Length: 66
View 1: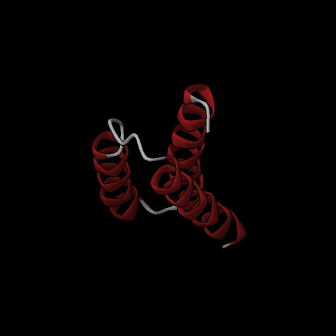
View 2 (view 1 turned 90 degrees about the horizontal axis):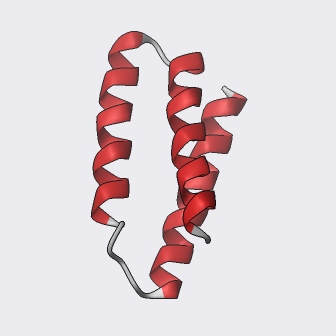
């Protein structure tokens, strides 16, 4: 995934948190997302990054469905 797409996914997740989650859950979710994206910022293996993006896209879909 291109860096811009990764940033868009990150922003979409944070936006979904603000739209769909109660305040307490949003704070926890935002902190977790920020931490995970920072940890994976330096990953170079394409397969690992692909799995990372796919799982976060599934998560985003789940948040938006509920």
